[in-house]
Amino acid sequence: MRFATHDGPGIRTVVFFKGCPLSCWWCHNPEGQSFLPDRLYFTERCRHCLECGAICPEHAISEIEGVVHTSDACTLCGTCTTVCMAEARQIAGQRYTVEELIAEVEKDVVFFDESGGGVTLSGGEPLSQPVFVTLFLAACRERGIFTTLETCGFAQPDVFQQVALQADLVLFDLKFVDPAKHRQYTGVSSDLILRNLEQLVARQRPLTVRIPVIPGINDSTEDIGGFVEYLSRLRPPAIELLPYHRIGADKYRRLGLPYKLPHTPQPAAADLAPFRDALTEAGLNVALLTPGV
Ligand code: SF4
Ligand code: SF4
Image (cartoon, rainbow, N blue to C red; front, side, top):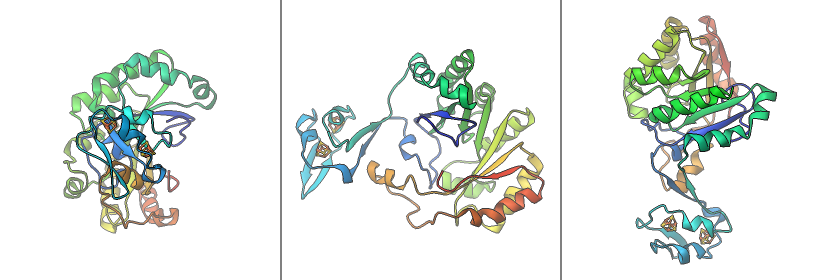
């Protein structure tokens, strides 16, 4: 994604890595969860011409009672995307070598230089592809490109430190400090995540802790108290509160996946003021990001 402005300083090109060990209920990049390519179908764009069905080598596409279906015979070959003039079919995820990816982001160097921006590695979870990410970060460094690593922190500590230390800035997503809630809403334990965060702070690396604030899930008085207590001890250099948004909800439909928070409202900035104020009163450096970012 080019011309991003909320995932690190300046104008940024964001590279989304596929595959994530977490499955957060509010994930707004569900196409990043699987390590394999995903098939996206935009119902509202489809003209029902069935050009896709005619070319599909697996005969996986058919129309039944006015609805275009794709069966499990689909091998994600992507052929159908080449004939759909309505762009109603897309494949999310493609393979790159480090050289191919660095060539792609180098096209934007002029914007990085003018704005103090750079490349952000996001996902999915970049740390799930540690060898590639290490090589890519090194290639960026060789070219003087500023790198930001956005991570959920779930990786073996030696892998985490080895990769994270290569990035110029780490945006560390912290969802819960309550271990039971972390497991319930993300599917994994928080042990590794907290340990990696604590080591990163101890190394005094450039770091921002990002808390996605999800109404009714991690913003109760008790939740806020837990964050304040934990972060007051940890004292990271910067914290950002990221209000829940529903931008990813449509993606679930395109992927044919259920969305677990169909009725959760998007909070206004004012709704997060008590959370921000509690952290500020503890002497922490807190920013509130714009809802919908
Ligand atoms: S080619 Fe595109 S517009 Fe035509 S039926 Fe297939 S998905 Fe729909
Ligand atoms: S991705 Fe390939 S196999 Fe799957 S529906 Fe499209 S053409 Fe058929």
